[in-house]
Image 1 (spheres, rainbow, N blue to C red):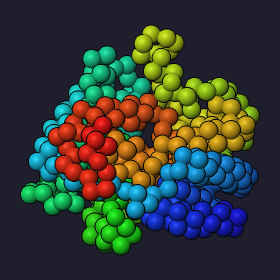
Image 2: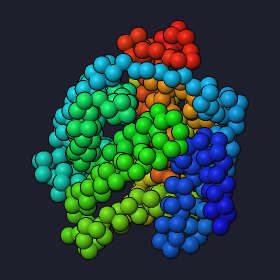
Image 3: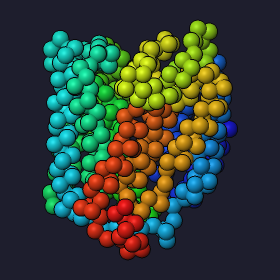
Image 4: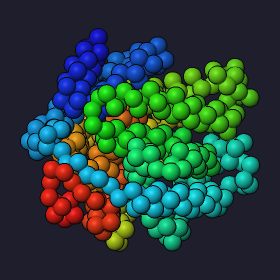
Length: 421
């Protein structure tokens, strides 16, 4: 009941504060609430109670720190302060086409990487759990790693222009959007990661809604595209069920049951494992290796220290899961002190980044979309500690400055100097 009241309080406040339903605070608290509801009766009562208590503590500190940062840096969105930019649609179209090319290249690199460890191509579909573990723990060739990072950076930056093109109704944009999502869906199947495709979906929705003028336009978006995104996610869950042979193993009676069951597990298992983690007597605290992985890995890239793998060990017996919610990462680093202290740190950090009054600058929109995606996935993992997303934010600033004169045509309430520089 306390978590429900906390969720309602933060949700009402956030909708009033941002004038949007799709906002970082609401996404964070609602996704945790759904996970908690689906976890009821599914795990040890003590694990559940401990997880519930520390999720409420973590939520409170993280959200309050986020709000404080928004107030300190005056981040609240305001229509009268926004800058109405007209994009050069010819440039937008070129960048959408570039995104298709980048998506295809990323798919080919993904296939190449998987085939370095998979016995054969069909094993990706028939024995995906085994192959995915090998894939995630592989030692990648440095050239392939650099190419993958470069493609990821350019994918997320150019993907930002797809919803812009859709809103401006560019010619043949609907088929292009379909092609991009189908390529990314197939890529997530090949790399055996439902998470990757859902990240793409959340990122796309976030960019689209950030560009809308008001809640009325937001409602139109949900009515127009909500079912299409729902179908894509269902298709992904069906394919995953086939890949992992859930029905053949007797885990589910059919694909409908598998979709609902997989969705429940995806939302609840991180919370189950978090509760189990809190009651382990053998936790070896990682002292910052998880939550500060971007800093450690950036130093490792220049030869200082060792690289920290994105793959965590499964410390509990709950479905052999190795995801523990955002707060699980914090706990594994510094115990209960980490849940409180790092919730404040990351809440303030993301609150400082998120700027809804973005004046339609692409670099700002991309940073905001990554914060929204991170908050959405809070029930699952702390995405902002994956090095690639910080790289994307920095790369977007550089990309924005390089392409500004070709991309921005005019601004009604700001000088052109403000837009270009």
